[in-house]
Image (cartoon, rainbow, N blue to C red; front, top):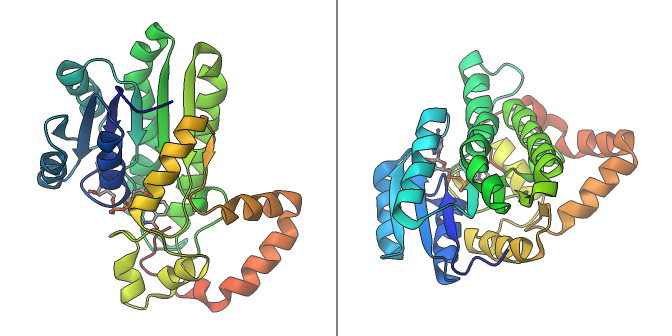
Length: 270
Ligand SMILES: NC(=O)c1ccc[n+]([C@@H]2O[C@H](COP(=O)([O-])OP(=O)(O)OC[C@H]3O[C@@H](n4cnc5c(N)ncnc54)[C@H](O)[C@@H]3O)[C@@H](O)[C@H]2O)c1
């Protein structure tokens, strides 16, 4: 899909990767960009920086009714949604001892929000026989995220859901991509890195920390190619293939690399 003349919605777009995507879609000539976030003021600032072809809509993506209202607002402002980027996500930095609230929040934001988005936007896309769902997952959905059990489990689930959507609705003209970066310089990762947190440092050590704009570059290329896995860190593809070829060898290497970090959970991104 080329973004030119398309109507696009981006959730989690008050900052970080979502804001970079929204700005880049406008530069690519999108007909309309809906900047959505639970942080309504932040979304409004990003939309204002983009200009006339952007509006801001405050949405808590864990609430299916609010996601349906977001789609309705996009349609009313610009027309039917061509590309829905389900990008909002949270990390906990907690291991298996994460409290129930952290597990529940991770499932709600990192998994169910994608289901709510697809449920809200697919009827119109299916009626038109075309549409694109982009889910921001993570390399943690293909590999793992040291120090964050809820993030790892829910990002794997998000990838499974993206695969299911791609398989089920592909024949009806719907395209799906899963965006799977490693470390990106955003508020999710950098405070932990700057604080010297062991888990965030593990993410930082696993590859280059790239800029949100570089993620946006990879998304534009990946959408144009209609590629299922969009990997802003290309080495993730080889890591994933290595894991699939020999899960035990991969786990052994991970145990060695992670070592004591697994015992020191804390804030983490990636
Ligand atoms: N930063 C990284 O290293 C990294 C790596 C891989 C994947 N990701 C993923 O990228 C996506 C964007 O994260 P980011 O790095 O830009 O972090 P970020 O914290 O800058 O942005 C996340 C945005 O999501 C919003 N959000 C959180 N809960 C929400 C909710 N319930 N409803 C609506 N919006 C909500 C936040 O307000 C925030 O603006 C996430 O899905 C994250 O898991 C990030």
